[in-house]
Amino acid sequence: MSKRILILEHDPILRELLAEFLEEEGFSVRSVGEARQILTNPNGPPDLLLAGIRALGGQGWRDLEVLKESHPPLKIVLLASSYQRPRPFSEGQVRPDGLLHKPFEPVCLQRMVHRVLSPRGGQGLFERIRDRVLTGSKELARTRTRARLRSLEPDRDCLYRRYLAAVRSGGLQTGAALELWDQVEELERARQRALSTEPVDLDRLRDAYRFVADLVLAKGRAGTVPPSARRQPGQVPRKVFAGLYGRLKRGEISAEQLKEASRLRMGPCGPAEGSASEQALCRAVWGPGG
Image 1 (cartoon, rainbow, N blue to C red):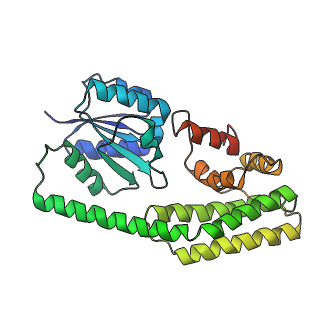
Image 2 (spheres, rainbow, N blue to C red):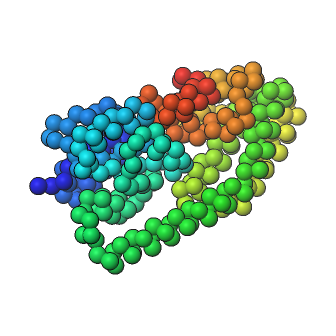
Image 3 (cartoon, helix red, strand yellow):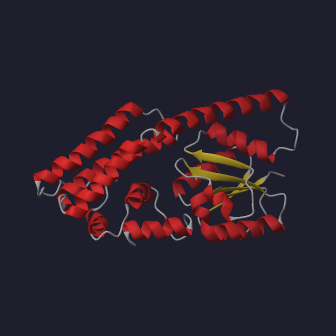
């Protein structure tokens, strides 16, 4: 009898791709998009749960504990966005058997699934050594990248503090602020790619943070700037940005919250996604429609 795998993932495209890949591997797969659905398993409890951390949310962790208590052999592999910290692990008593950071290669998923579902000792010595070396090498590269990214923080902090001060003082009007925010989000996308160990020139990224920080001063001195051209896909809508601008102007958002703003918008927190604190911060920064 084939092993049963349950997929919990809010992204329907990723969910479909995971299900298709694992079915080709010979597993019996069921996929759901909401955490509350993991307790409903008409074909019996799964052998493995692949769960997106954002899809779990707060209630999902509690449902996961119930599922684990009712079926102790259950194995759990969490799917985390590249920029997510492992803080959600502390929200429940269940410890995962594995963790995959998006985006991941199919071979990484294949190895992880077979490892957690294989009987103890079923993997040969060579395979165990190989997997440990590969995992260690990737972790070393990730650690080095994160260390270099930390060295960019002073320039990143300077940009956000300067942007916030320029808006609050009235020097940076809405049109210029929106134009600059588009550039800020581009910088943050590059930073997120670097966090996922994609090749990014960090020296150029540092220079870009400094350049945009200087642009904030220049745009502030230039006065009123006409609205930019039509918004491009992926850029923040004018109406949504107007809400952010108003909150900045009224002093309702701190520099630290502003630093999280682009991450929250690029990784939206829905009703069942993210921790309660992340959802609250998302609403505080971007409003209910952000």
